[in-house]
Image (cartoon, rainbow, N blue to C red; front, side, top):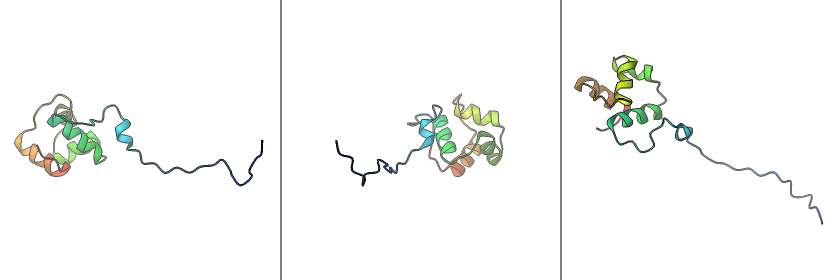
Length: 88
């Protein structure tokens, strides 16, 4: 068996991976408003407490929207739409 010294055995591969999609809590196909809020927040790299501060609510309120499917009050819903650039 001949060994070709021109072949190094090292290959370079460029791939793109969306690490969010590997997170089991990341809604890949959001159906509810809460899932849409969660996905948009995660896409923007915001933590729950950061979104809460921007919108002017508590972290528990954001959790209620995202996980418990509580609909935000109108004044907060408008802020969420603007901050996260989502339609509802």
